[in-house]
Each structure stands twice: as structure tokens, then as C-alpha cells.
Length: 562
Image 1: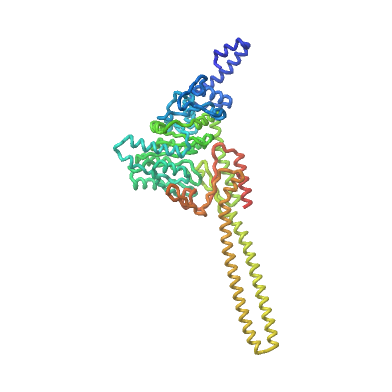
Image 2: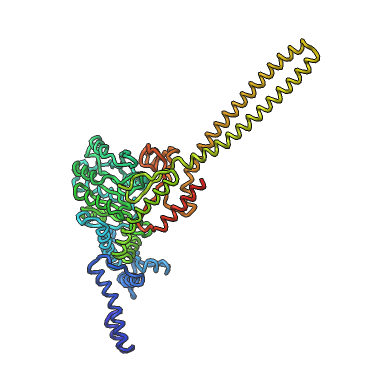
């Protein structure tokens, strides 16, 4: 209610009471005014009632919510279900216009305002997380997940190069140099853009899987700069893979004048990654870096943020988006950042960094207790851990199976020996009977019986050997099957115990996978020949100490049952 209407209420309600009401409503109006002027995260997050008041106020600016609006066009923001309308707070027009996703809509001033404010809040949050101003000329929040956003970015890069110099050989730029990262969406984003991925194998350095910078430069020389669209690096990944050396890659790209796209999917929560991106933008070439909204801001899946030091390129991507877009992912981020506020966002980043050390210590303790090893990657990968799945428990399984089968072998040997003894006794008895009857026949019978005994012994020995060999073969097969089965089942057993997110990389199966016509050995491990199978977990934003403790307890209990 505006001030004029409140003053009018003094004819109905006692004046002092209305003055108190004016004071209360002015506090809300002050919050909204501060947001509109400064366009930054509030120091302390707003409660849900204040956020809903803001949303309802702004949604009244869209034409579909005008009290006397009559719509006679083909798209008038009509929503059949009241439940759906309430879910979207009356925002039905989406964002952008047919020519530009950031273009303001005449029918939807409220939706356009939400988009503008959200971009400003995201930029503020990114700076607070550690990105330097020089690397953040602009940002664009798209209602697509990271993979499709990467595709649009590369398509825009290719078209911008063609438009900037129509007479050049920019159409030949079809190769994307891609240090191997075993995440399907990364590879598919290249293929969907109609480009050709050139996989750069990684190299092993201690426990870490790292970028092969020499291989990147050699491939540039081999293919020719004129044929390469960009280098596509990755900062957030599953250990023992560590983030690509984006600073060194950016310097290579600057030296050869090749574009550089960074997949920073969940790197916004890590200050080390953001520092490296800022340095890469300052020292080398970075055209854009893309991050997920759900992995960094804890909203439902469906949004990604494009940012970078080159504002014109970000604007080109916005103009290249075909048609309008769904506003739900933008609205989700807007609500969440207002709810977090500056202090809430900074506290989440601080807590994650502290829990990273705690999680590392708990995994180290578990590894020592279970004869495993926590792979040494925390110096470079500040989000993910990898724990070996190697010897102790699986050796116990082998020993149990070996002992059981050895017992069976002994029983078989004893039975055969008893049979041999019985046969020998029978033969000896026959020999004695024959001795009493006829000496000449005795000699013949003894010879025959001895021969028969020898033959029987040989047959029994052969049978024993065959049984032993068969049992040994069965032992080996059973051991291998049990070992592989147990290893591959750890992930599903953890999931069935309500532990989600962990991944088992079973290298004993030598898993091969073909994606986009490219074959990868030991897919999931980011390299062909990592020396051990392992389990990965992550210390991502929002995780709690209770979740870490409960996971360690359930993993320990599972190990005891193996």
C-alpha cells in the first residue's frame, strides 16, 4: 500500500496506529529501494515473506497481471493452472525477445527487471567468491545446463570469427583441442556444435592426473592455427584428475591467437580455481568461462552462467540465442541470492573450505584403518577426493575362498587315498587266497594285481591331479569374479545406504566406451593407465559435518561386511 492510501486509512483507523503501519511498510520499501539502487546482495539475507512481497510487487509490472488487461495476441502470458501460476509468482512472459535474450519486453517490464537484477546479483556473488573485476566484464545467465551453454558459446565463437573477417579461412576452424576429461556433456557439447574434438591425453604426476601442456602445443603445430577454433579446458573435475593448468593454457592461446573456453562447472565455490581464472584472464587469453547455477548456488538444475573479460563476446552470445527463454532458472537464482545475502554466501564458502580439511582428515583415518590410500591430490584439487580400492578387503575374500577350496581338495585327496587303500587291501586278500590255492597262479596273480594296483594308483593320482587342477582353476575364477563383483558393487551398496554422489572407478574391468565415435580406455578415470581402482567423493558447497561423519560411518560399516 502506498503512502497516499495509508494516509487515507486515518479516516478509518486511529492515526497513531496508521503511523506505525507507515513506519513498517516504509522499512520494506527501503529494502526494495536499496536493492534497486545498489543492485548487490543484501548484507543479511531477506526472509521468505519479504522476498515474496518483492516478487508480487514486481510481477504486477507484467501485462498479464494488469487488472484490466485484455490480451488479443497469440502469446499473452495465459496460465491455465492456478498452481502453476503461483509456482511462478505470475511471471509468464519469460525473458528476452526473439532477437536477443537480454532484450527488454514491452509486455513484461517486471520479468525484464528480474533478469537485470539477477545478473547484477550474480556478478556481485562472483566477485565476493574471489574473481577479480578484470575477468568479469559482464555475465549472462541462460536457462540451459552447462553442456548446452558450452555448445552455444562455441557456436557463437565460430560465427563471430566468420562475421569479423568474411574473406578469411575462419570456416576451416573446426578443431577443438580438449584435454581429456571423462564427463560426457563436455565432449557432446563439442560434437553438438558440429566441431571436431581433438583429445589431448593427460599425464600422470605422482597420484595426480594433469594437463599435458607440451602435447597441446605440439598438436597446435601439427594441425595448424588456421584450423583450430579453440582450446577447451576444465577446472572442476573428479580426483585424481586435477584442474587444467588454465594460466599456462591461456598463455599458449595468447601466443598462437587461439580462443580459449573454460568449463568451470562447479569451480565458483573454490577460491583457488577463481584465482587461477583471474590470472589466466590477466596474463593470457580467455574468451569465456561457464559455470553451473545448481552446483554453485544450490538451485534446481537448468541454468548456467557465462562470463569473461570480453563484454562484446558475452553480448554476442546473448544475441545468438534464438527466441525468448524460460525465466524459471533466473527466478530461482534471484530468490536464492536474496535469501543468502552477502553474509550467507560468504559463510557457505568459508564452511566448505573448512570442511574440506576435515573431510580429508577423516578419509585419511579411514584409509589407514582399512589398508587403503587417500590419493594425494588435495594440493591441486580443492573439491574432490579419491580413495583407493585395492588390496586388504579383497585379499581377505581370496584367502577365505582359497581356504574353502583347499579344504575341499584335502577331502578329495583323503577319499581317493582311502579308496586306494581299500583296493590294495582287497587285492592283497585276493593274493593271499590265491597263494593258498596255487603257487604258480600266485606269481601270476601277484604280478597282475601289482600291475592293477599300479594302474589304479596312477589313475587315482591322475584323478587327484585333475581334481586339484580343476579346483585351483575354480579358485582363481571364483576369486576374480568375487573381487570384481565386490569392487563394482561398492558404489551401488553405498547408494542403497542413502549415500549419493560417490563414484567407483573400477580399472580391473578395463572399461572401454565409445562417445561421438571416439573410443576411451578405462572411461571415467581420465587416463588410459591409472594404476589403481578408486572411489571418488566431493566436498561441495552446502555439505555439512554431519553428512561427512555419516558417510564415513556407513562406508566403514560396508567395508566390514565385505
